[in-house]
Length: 221
Length: 113
Image (cartoon, rainbow over all chains, first blue to last red; front, side, top):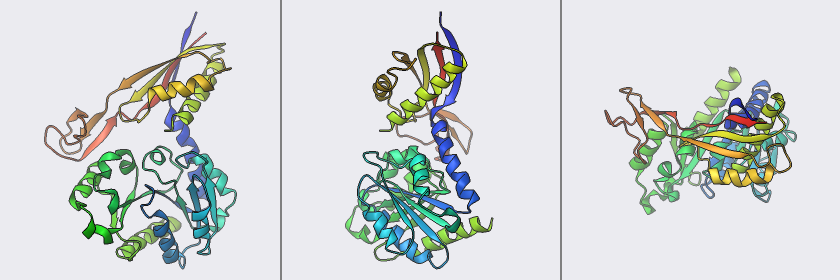
């Protein structure tokens, strides 16, 4: 004799509860957290390093870097003089809330105003695993092509801001900016959008000013 | 890609509810999967067979119920089903649309002994 037990629970929300616990911790310690996502080679590390340099005079910054292997990126962050923790995910293609929780043991959140989390380079899985960040930030780049919003809708829907990196390469690629923008707008209307080049520095001022204001508003709030 | 952690969560939630109901065996699970949830049934099943081994859920049947994506136009209020990659409102052509159904991934119920 079997009986039916009603459960009605969201499996994703169970996972999300762990991210919410992280968020509470960040709010308590007054740490503004940015989860940086992008495909491999979009220029995450370069843009992050330039952002650390630009915002270091204003905030106490720390970094967490997620990669399948090596501590190359955390070392690069640490070279700017900030505390940085490397998370090696082994084979896992994304950071999750528990990995971030473990990394936090190595950081002093009370002494951190801005925590930058560099996720594993991947446009699929990180979109499904919230970390508890205040801003989910996507770095797209010109060489990836203008059709990426259409191909990775979940990623483009789940972020609060997007940078389009490597705009210095626009003359060399068939990148239709209107088509790209339209794809973003359909999925995520009114999204903050920053065309820039981490290499030449074009557009960085606008992005850094925006991020600085986000952090400042959070810290004052 | 992330079906293993999802399968693990399904098992954990199912075992919690079975224990609360005083069950000795889980026979079946009903799982609702929205069209946009990016969850692959077969892969969940594959991991499920491995991780449920040795638990009271071993051998339980996973019943997946697919539900379609439903969108609503912000401008004229029309509700419509997702038609391929075409996201614009079929009534007024607006591209400002909200997803109101289709991202679900829920454990609805379990059948226990």
